[in-house]
Amino acid sequence: MRYTLFERQRDIIILIARILLMILFVTSGWAKLTNFSATVGYLGSIGAPAPMIATAVAVLMEFFVGIALVVGFFTRPLAMLMALFVLGTALIGHHFWTMPDADKAANMLHFYKNISIMGGLFLLSVTGAGRYSVDRR
Image 1: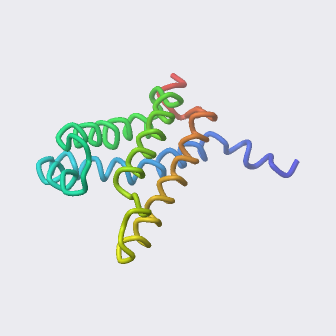
Image 2: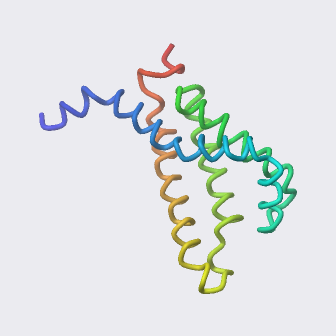
């Protein structure tokens, strides 16, 4: 069969995918955690509702849920929850349709990047974490 190699490597590919999907979130979450007050100020400046709470949610989701997904802990529901978080950040932070032309292109790119990441998270919620995970233990 031509897909045999991929099937044999399925669990390692899922592990690599989890790591690659979460690199952005864990590093961003760490930056938010270590610069909490600056993040609160930034989120307030872009009109995020309740910037202090929004920052705490962002740190929780990006850093702590991100790490949980890397190690494969409670993967299916957390991947779905992360997908919803990513949709929220796209709608709150990258609402390109309301922005002037100077900001529109970059924010449209970030908005669709978030939508693409949601696709990976949906796929992870269906496949699960694979053999190399806490879920499998």
